[in-house]
Length: 322
Length: 290
Image (cartoon, rainbow over all chains, first blue to last red; front, side, top):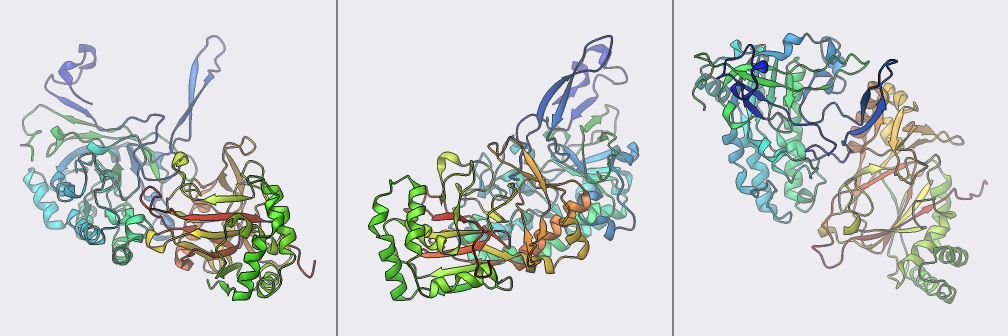
């Protein structure tokens, strides 16, 4: 939830002005399946043990089955398979990244108009409304997913409209509006609006890399062309050969310049499953999303985080929301 | 992969139909599969002809792909009799503790949907081997297509473990041969939530490549291990053959030498007759060389 600092008790307001805003950008980790399409069991399991002090008694909880890419988390270069063979250096353990990589001036870019372009195919609750047997409409929908792309010109124009430029930022977050559909539930990958999200063209990715942004993020399942929600054996494509052929052909193209590959491959980290309220759209503020200091062998892929966003009340921090 | 196909002649079909009407079957109670299987084994022993000739190459020759598609089966009143009779030609019919009866119906059961793909729901099911969590999975199984309209989806997918392995980098094969992979086990299996095995092995006698694999919930102890799994999955996708197992056909499948899967299919709620296959496990068959 967002808090205006003025609602907090005085002892928690030290260092903040009353008008400062502090926004928690994370989804809670509960014992329920996070919003996902995987069939894997992602429900954390809690057990309790007695603390091992000698003079006092304590209770300590253990959490098993806690995936590091559940709920709000960060993708690191090691999230890509065989990255060590492709990158110029070995991927780093997630805890070995300096904390400065996760802190700094960040713009929340409003791209919610993108999702609005495919809203007509979904119910108000976010379920795909197309009859799987309606190949014509399904193909129209699949083709329309390209409208979710943000190209370089559009990226620059939107950032510029917020009074910013990429080179002045540490991070860039994309507010798609998909987080309205976050639920603690598993769905079919192709059936639920939360898994459809804006994505970047190759040139837009290259501009982000060239500007040396430390991270990007999105309030959706991922920053990737949503066609990757299909493998080719899902019900709507199985029943419609034209759709199946379209998916197979387009997947080859989409995969070649996948956002994950282009960004993570150049050490631009990606926050996923953020919670970005309307009030922060178009706002530049101070972001912090430091992961835990996990330096376990091989853990180079993901990390849980509880990012927050501070909007200071001084002039210049809060541009007109766009 | 190229499966072996065999179409029954009119004579064989009639003989099989007659075998399934053998009065001995009437003595078995409807839900007594022990009795049904015993009778089917006796009845199968009397069958002759081309179908019996398919047995030896399938079960004994490592060079033959372990996938036989039998077409032109008779439509019989009791499909379980048919699968039990034909299946027992290939080897002893077996079942495993806690895994249900000899013959399991693969059809959507709306009362037991679950989230993982299974025989009881209509989800797509990535190519896998059955009973990946038991120490000694069945070497073969039979799958009889009773109702299966291609217009409703539900295409079967098969890929040969030898072909998959041949396309993998050496390093990936070495990783997959390590006993580092955690296969989730159902609650009824000896109380363990997962068991640890390699994905790839070799058959002792012939040196043939064997696999145990189920993609969903599979974990590896090392990063190199899971990267090898990704390579394996990609190889499965690139070597996979899709087959429409139409009604009145049966597949005899090597459970350790062939991965099998299916695409999604239309829910039985939306069609008059939902997809229905019967499946039966077959144990180590006796061969002419013992």
